[in-house]
Amino acid sequence: MKNSIIIIFLLSIFFIQAQNDQKIAFGPYIQQMSTKDATLCWSTIEGESTITFPKGKTDTIRSYKQHKIHLANLKPNTKYAYDVLNDGSDEGKGILTTFPDKSIPFNFVAIGDSRSRHDVHAKIVKKIQEKNPRFVINSGDLVGNGLSIKDWEAFFKVNKEFMKNTPYYPVLGNHEKDSPYYYDFFDLPNNERYYYFTVGDALFIVLDSEGLRTTVPAYVKGDKQDQFWYDSGIEYLKTQKIWLENVLNLNKDAGFIFVFQHLPLYSVKKSRVEESKMARKFWGDIFFRHGVQVFLNGHDHHYHHAIDNGVHFITAAGAGAPLYKVDAPQPETVNYKEIEHFINVEVNKDTAVLHVIDIDGNEFDTIEIKRRNTK
Ligand SMILES: [Fe+2]
Image (cartoon, rainbow, N blue to C red; front, side):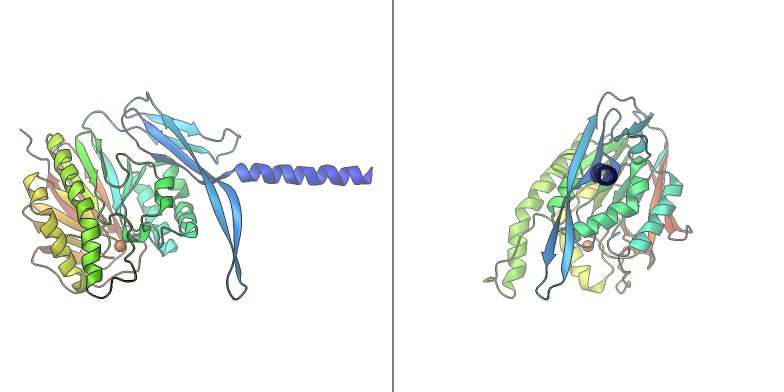
């Protein structure tokens, strides 16, 4: 009798453990939001592997299984409660709000380089939650190393509550390393590398400044390495430029156009000024010609605002990576600050206002842009 009680007890532990393995590890979170559709994503733990280092130290690394549900035939500008677990707990519950099909006021948040200081990232996310944005867009370097699952574990832990209710749009940064994890975890329009979406009559375009992951062979030495990088990436960028031109032509009636990529076009970090000038040369007058109002990027870990030909070029990369000093302000520079921050953008009928807010919630810069003249 005593033995059978012990067996039942052990079986219950096993059963509870099996249930826990089905519990959500990452998410749930919202992708591909539109006026009628949305995708719910979450991950469960699939397995664990152990790696032993040369000196005998071991580490356990988890693998995850991705789950995805596409919701269709939703109503515009409507809140839906969802539950991807249906187990009576709050674990799988969230609220999604579809995008409006009319031009009504809304706000979104832009951040960049959340990367490695998780305490800073968590504080920024908490401040963003107070603004209740329709969505957030992260201009790249979401994690320190995109190939490390432990970095993604930290990212999803910080964003767990926030991402349940707020669609998250990522941009590829150099630290993502073109990792398969990025494409597994996010469900994005187009080819997932560069894409666009709309909210009301505002257009949001995401570019990929990083290109395909290329390894320079060991036999390419010295100065030839830069040439190798250039030659391997240029065709990819040219294809993207044709795509961008098409997207801007297709959407010439948009009231507001925001473009995002990871690398700056106006760097104020001495060691990167030349590289940003090269990038400007590549894109030419495309942003001016099409009346893009705001170009937002990451990579340089500070806040910087430049204006050129009426276009606002903004670096907003203060969501967690160590801050950089501004040591080379440019003729186009209007403002800069070495501080952790995010931008809450309020899009109204005739104007959009960019509220630049520090980690303590203080607004330290405000930029107002006017609706594009589309008549
Ligand atoms: Fe970067």
